[in-house]
Image (cartoon, rainbow, N blue to C red; front, side, top):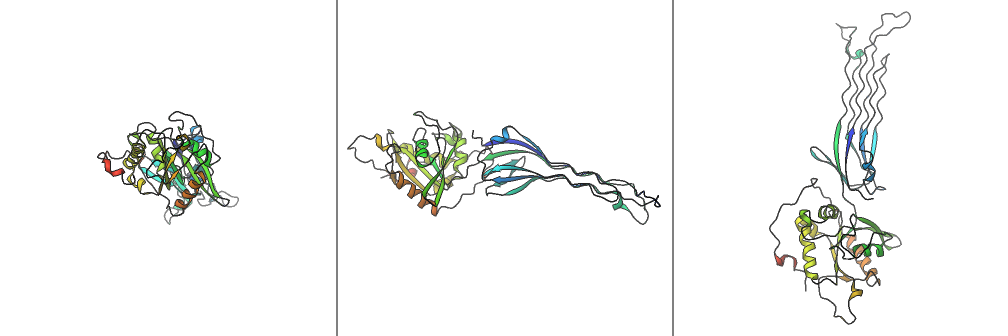
Length: 348
């Protein structure tokens, strides 16, 4: 099951208290102060783990606490520090606190301290002065940091499949990769992202994401808009997939580009490839449709599939990795409706 949002509570360990004690040994009945310092509390760390692809485990465990530090010992011995804990999260997880974005785990093996353990208190031997040779003062350990966190996963895919519901995205993913998403002839079969590995050659590969279909108004939350658009921000290349059997292919492309622009205008600046799908359903002898697409394919007959893989690989070679920050649940500003001519540039 794919889960891309979770709320958890983290608590770092408290520092141990300092001790008040005095040395008592044979032949030294009135030894000086020897109370040791308390140990530091354990901290909570977040680790970006490339082996994880969902936040599902955090549905079952929502509270994480590090160990407290021990109280200081006698003979100036410090208490043991509390053990740190690590929470492993998928690469691409953004972490929010009450104050906003705290960190973006965008790189594999990133390690971030989200809650620092409290410092241990001072034992009474620290407070000896010329006037006070037997202090009965020690300090308490500090409280560890505690936080409520919102975790939001944004997939780190190389290519994102963009298309209306039932455009053939899941079928294409199953043809290009070993992934086996749910496929059916009705809209919104894909309710969550699916990932697959495409291999242009024996020694090269890239990640392709099949994302829930867009509909008009997705940038305002209609359909699965937020669930889709949150993930498309992380992709390096966009693959616009258009159904050749649609009654108005031109309008379909306009809808896709308009929704992406309303969500984040920078999305349309990324390398992209427009592909016409389901060409096996066209009647024989049908004149090839004119349009901005650079490739026509049939997932059923595999026509054009290998050419598509090589074109995507070539686009990826020069595509930079996007780095996007967005507040959780932030909505794009309601912008003036796009003019009809804005999305006509590529149409023949």
